[in-house]
Image (cartoon, rainbow, N blue to C red; front, top):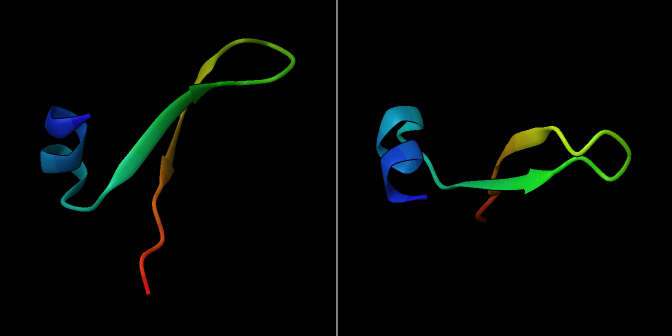
Length: 31
């Protein structure tokens, strides 16, 4: 997760798609 965070320059989460299992990268929204 750290490397992806550096690439996107923001916190991100990676998780498999519920149906396809394809890895999804979603930005973590911090207020």
